[in-house]
Length: 412
Image (cartoon, rainbow, N blue to C red):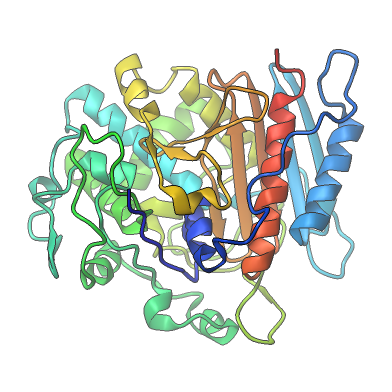
């Protein structure tokens, strides 16, 4: 099995891409998630509020974050904890109910709409990109007639993971210069097909396909949704998921670079001596259907709970989404046992069973989720303050251990 990697200024929004950013440190010992250790819990084995507060403070310190907020749910019982600052040097805590950029968690919303359309007969997972978007993917060995919708959602298309930083640069000054720039989806795809593909598209029945995370693949998915429905992908997500589920804090910002209040600031350490750069205000049009949505912890929890509980997809389509493939040995560095379905991640828990969900990263913020298979227990983590490779490894390890401990606490 082959898994190619590419460092991206945007970290492009998932656990898999984070590992790609860490490829150069792939042999660092101890990079996998920390083993589950039973911490004192309530008499029924579940976490208490005080225990979650301690765990959250630990992750803040070990992960090198500026601020962090955690939501843990076990059935109808919900706990919240937060640590650090919402804004540097103010002492102001991360606000409850804060909006944040959910980054690549967007992909699960988009994949859900795609699978709804498949259930309705509006498109097929075996449809090719060329069928829906003639002539868009071609050149340099790229061939849209060989790439299917399934390939796009599964990251097995081989499409190069282009990011706008390749043209604009990767320093704090570059970010400041380009933070409000607009990028059309066609520009993102042109950047991707300007490179040779990483590998040939995988057949639908390949149990161990070549795999590499590709944000342009999800940008293409958004373009196909618009072709199939006559509406932009964000409007389909709004009408099919956000409104029916009452996700009042979730929306696509378009070109609006500002978050609504309440929110925490996000900070990133770019290469060089610049220190923290405030990345809160930015235009994420480049991310489109790959990573543009804004949401809240409550909304992310409600969405995945509805999805895994069968409220958004018929059984056949939900089974397709859950049918995962391995992501390759190199991605095991920070994410042991990670497998990818159709816009859905699966990772083993140390207490047995699996954690489902999706992660997301942009410069400055980290989002991690974990849900039991039926959605009855959940963890949503939103943290601000990101930096170089060493911090990314430590932060991923710390957050993963929190998710594991929260989902394992009280598990039968």
